[in-house]
Length: 308
Length: 308
Image (cartoon, rainbow over all chains, first blue to last red; front, top):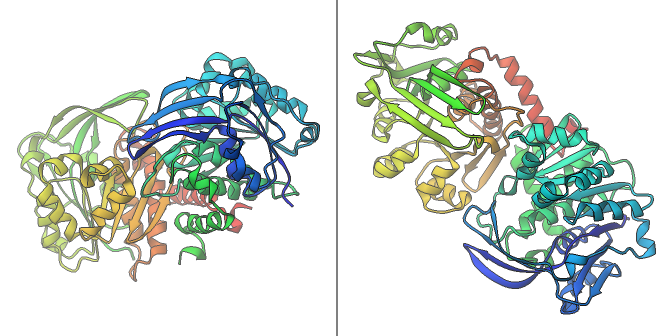
């Protein structure tokens, strides 16, 4: 039996533009992407806020996967909305507008039973809120946070304190460099590890991800897709596939299990980017992910029977 | 017994600037890097040109590794020299100057016994010369060429004809996109494969390499280095480690052997960039490469006993 995962993050409406198309006001937000991915593996408890303009039917697909939405607050005002544009270099995002709406005053509130959650993912929200949420959860087995350049620049002290509290940090390579003031991702990762966490997942967009744990590391390439339609949500669905996979394990999480989890994250994210917004994740199954996982074995292993 | 590899390419003096230092008039050139790498595995026959200003002692280290230099012409004039600068984004090169010298009129001339070379690597020279060299070699088992944006733009017809002649193409990801006029490396690689070669090695700098063979692919991450001092020659030493490894096999080259060869290429290139110019390759041993190869197993395999 998979164990529950508490996720706190954003729910948003996204306007998306890529060289391959446009999508207006589609469901997005870090908590949505994480929950859509992780719910393939484990029971999810979602903590976020939407405005009273939010059509709850948008979340029917999550409800159908058993996602617990009691932590989703409905506040008076507009749901967070964001507009982003990607050029052919899909690793770079241009923000067209940010309308925080009710997310500006978001204060996570946990239903009582949520405070017993073995797995906790704090998506990209203010690090002071991340700390507060983690502090409320008793009996936590594995905690992970994601962050962004904004907090590195404006709330570094809070971010460092949040990082000291968690087991794992999920962060992209530009943010590693910025946080640690070094051009070397390896050096940067080691500096972040020195702050306390047991591991760092460094996301490299179309180039995959690297996990650093102490002196060890593990490299997961991205799945070589013919077409990436929309990279939005890749990082959060990566985190969802990763943590969802881990939540299946009641025993000790060994390095071998962590490595498989990274590949699951990479496999899930490779589906996310195939379509705009959450479209692909809505219809994704564990069998789809398992098939792609087998492909990852084939195109990465060179010292086993798999490739013969 | 490893089989001989014929390499044709450039020998140059490089002026190099990176954020980590400078080096003036150090030995470089595609043939030098390839030979330095491949000579760890197999007998090398080097075809290139230098000016009469070239101190032959520069090649003592290759001679010591048994590299056959009878194909190295000495012409009246200056040796090719090149100046390049890299910013923190070491994937991008800024050319400061190019002085072709005797390389401008280079016409490869093969000692008679070179025309029986089972392995041939045409480094980045004019594709018409690549075709000519390949055409002269009888009984060739495996041929590979490397190219660059210059030839894509100025000698596309010759390049396509050269590509049709070889088994493998080594090319960087920006060149794949340029050659195939697509933003997708996967689509671009398939378009190049449609021209005839059996495989393409797409080099991605600090992100490693992907080999496409028909509908299959294999992904090799780069070794996560704390510091990359100078990326010059990474691509040619990758090709050298790759082809050198293959030259050890007398039998059929299976996909499994190709995959191991890609990892050897990636391992060798990871040493190249640790120091300026050829410094690290000069002192590199097969045992060094083998140790790093074992590390590659550890940080890429997730479905074997290796990682337990």
